[in-house]
Amino acid sequence: MDEGQLLMTQAERDRLHALKKAKQRKITQQEAAEELDVTDRHVRRLIAALRARGDKSVIHGLKGQASNHRIAETKKRKAIEILSAPVYEGFGPTLAMEYLRDKHKICVSKETLRQWMAGAGLWRTRKETAKKAHLWRERRSRYGELVQWDTSDHDWLEGRGERLYLIAMIDDATSQLLARFVRSDSTAENMRLLWTYLEQHGRPLAFYTDKASLFRTAEKRKRDEPGVDKDPVEMPPTQITRALGELGIAWIPAHSAQAKGRVERNFRTAQDRLVKGMRVAKVKTLEQANEYLDKEYLPWWERTLTVEPARADDAHRPLEERTNLAGMLSHVETRQVGNDHTIRIDGERYRIAREHVTAGLRKATVRVEWRLDGSIAVRYREHYLAVELCTQPRKPATAQPKPTSNRKNRKRGSDWNKNFDLRKASPLWRAAQSSGHGRGGTD
Image (cartoon, rainbow, N blue to C red):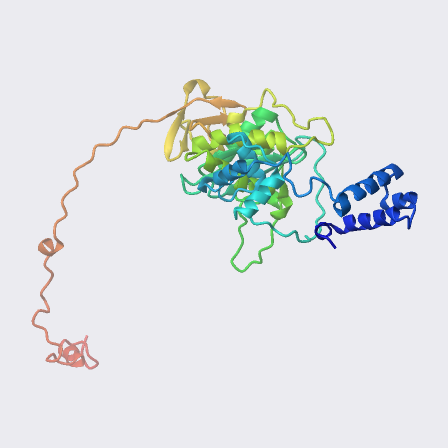
């Protein structure tokens, strides 16, 4: 066996064996063509090459040579050098491919980059394992039929700035996403995002959330009472669920984290891609985080991860003319009007303007709204009342008499028993006899 045969593959050896049998006329050229699955003309050309070049004729002439489409080694070294920087730590092949293409003008396929990164120790390939089969719930058929709503508490800035929360609303039918970074997961911040959603899209049919205290009043029970959930309808609504009821939007509570999987998977994507993107962009403040979210992340999500709904009609309902978002999306409580047409709000007394005083207003119940802009509004039935803070003059402080010591001014008591000694005194019966009040005494 010559050197050429040592470099051959098994397929090339089989081809050489068939050609030699045809050359030696042990089989016909037609039989060789059938065995090699080629035409008779191709067999004749291969036999001629075998006579001219020997056994090496069955090996492709370009075997072992570099491809004309091979990526230059300098391009590979530059890509690895860029991805080795600390700012790109933890980037996967897909995300790294996008950043090399968009920021550094290095175009390479994801699979090629994966091999480069694995060879340089920047990416560890994972062996695919069989996962437990999971039956996914079908999406809702219409846009605006169901919107999942949740908040993610995560170190979004990786210690470069203050602690932030990400509130997100994602449509179940299309995966359309609305999100905002905030400093606290409060009722006011959630209402602000709800206001933005309503102005941009209208009123959806239902919101799907967890059972956090923002959406469900905490259940009160005795210490020894078993922890059985009560019907949420029996509990008083929170400020958000009250507002949803006034807007005609249903609230559906999720009984597990897996039930709201679409918004949870959105957060997993954001905690990987969004965190790394803000790291590269050197985001350090809340304002910069929301700017990056609006200009970079949400547009990427829109063109990459959204889908077309099963039905083309939109389930969102427009806001009505009488809809007062400022009043509905506020903290609402009730107060009773006093006989002097004043009400107590936050420990202060407010007077209802004279022109808004009507019959039956005394002792009536009014609605007080603490609005998101910091103002206070008072509504009686369907009309808002003008109120003003009562300014009461402070009473002058009266001089208090200086307390005196009781020991000096204490009144002296009687001294009738000053020299009395019980041990030296005569018995009581003898004293009674001497005074004429004993048994033998006279009247």
